[in-house]
Image (cartoon, rainbow, N blue to C red):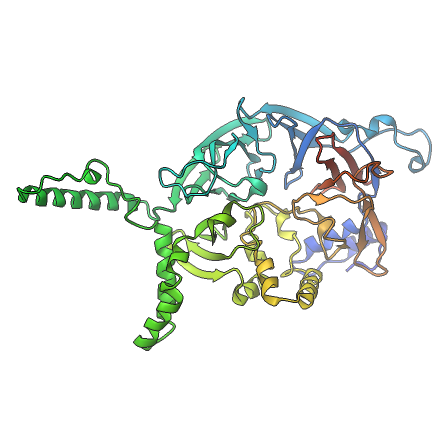
Length: 536
């Protein structure tokens, strides 16, 4: 631990002191207590773009045009200007320093969407090891689309969803993957998860988890589909078995001369859609049945238990659909099941839901919990970092604060838990975030709760829009005497003139540099107010 808060003294301490094994990165991150974005340039002159985020390595700033047709990528650079006087800190910045292009250099502008498609501005995934970016474009939703071809009734349809894989270094489009007449929840990356080079895309409409691999050359290679079938040869086996049954039935009909009725259902390709539950649903029901069967040793008690807990709720289990998926590692998926209404709702917290761990290699359900289970909450509380599955090459994402790796976050969680009037509702609310959305948190050191304290109702590492406030957001040091280190204030410096207009703010923190953007916008499509916060 540094003995002084002075940055020069800390540099001397770094030269003569050796941190404890395994703590060198945490030791170095203490320097951010001195290097803070304490200066703000208000209402920066900048293009009227929709700014998405910095990449996790800080190399690029991703933005989209207002018509959601083009991708614009910037390279962050540090402000530089000359000053003739001895004490430059007392002087205001020159006018050019207050422009957006003094902090960022535009690398390129790429048209992604066709005439009837729009870029999904809330979706972006970054493959740090190859500097690949994954973007999505789609046509408009059709809310009352008929449930044809095995689609789930009540789930909207999108005529065309296109995933674009780009090399961010030069903006070249490497590959595309198109889904037609389907529905993938792209809001905040909810329906897509990237782990290393594996990509999981959840089709809500057809209840299929598509597993793809991103090759080094930039190809999207289809690996497998999990849903109706679990193993690669399941469809072949069932089709061949159905054809054999059809031939047997046809032979029996020829044996009966009085029977001239033809069953057209067995002619041509067999129709298995109404014959079987999907493969993933079969695995789920089998796991639930076996778990209840093994609870009791007495056969009479077993039958009674199965009647109450399995057969009575059988149709409820059958009606469950896949909501969301994340990788836990290269072999296991965390799958969230729930009702159809909850799967397409903006707020699914009040809908009953279940969480299952699925092994892709053995095609077995490993565990199954309701989202109000105390056992699952204890795992979530003690091993939260295991649910934040990050790619092995993403070093910066390993230092995101959680209640399983940070004592301040743990104390905050327990304080909220102690104040909760209904423990069951508290557990359900906390577990509603599982599975976590991919790359939904900023790795910025200013969100490290061992370094700074801030109001997480106004700002946090989670990538979400917040209701804007005219008061600055304070970042207070955790070290005694707990000084105020810097403030982040979105919107105009003098505050908003129209207090009735509802304003929302988003914050884009650079993962390494003391640099941040605050973007305030109203709901009436007025130009956004962009402030740049940096260390002068």
